[in-house]
Image 1 (cartoon, helix red, strand yellow):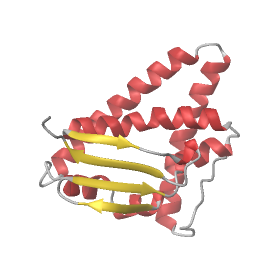
Image 2: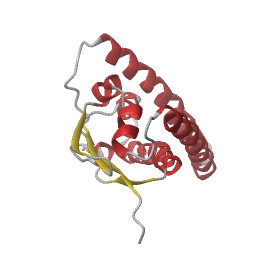
Image 3: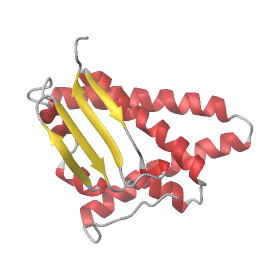
Length: 169
């Protein structure tokens, strides 16, 4: 059972940002579910993932150009996750060093939009994994490793992720 709680309420900027993110998620979710209903789920998933990866490359390049020390994971995360984004997703930093940042997201506005549309848990989980291709692509563009642990869409209490410098093994 998915529990996508909200703790931060009544912050006008957070509310606006959550609304915009939810609207984007609505488009993606309806595109996928309409394609699935038409028997084209695999094709739609492939196209959506490709678009999300490309978006991640664009966003990653923008973050890299705005980060004074792009090789520093903390600098990257502080450029990527502005204070408003941190509040929007209710992010908790578990580890924050130059080499690695581990985070837990306590709320997901994308997931909330999919839940509000009445999508079942399996569809929410699929859409979440597609959306995470953006984060994977951002990390790759930055030259970092990306790790995704448990997610709210998968029934976890939080979305656990980390960004770290690549190790030369």
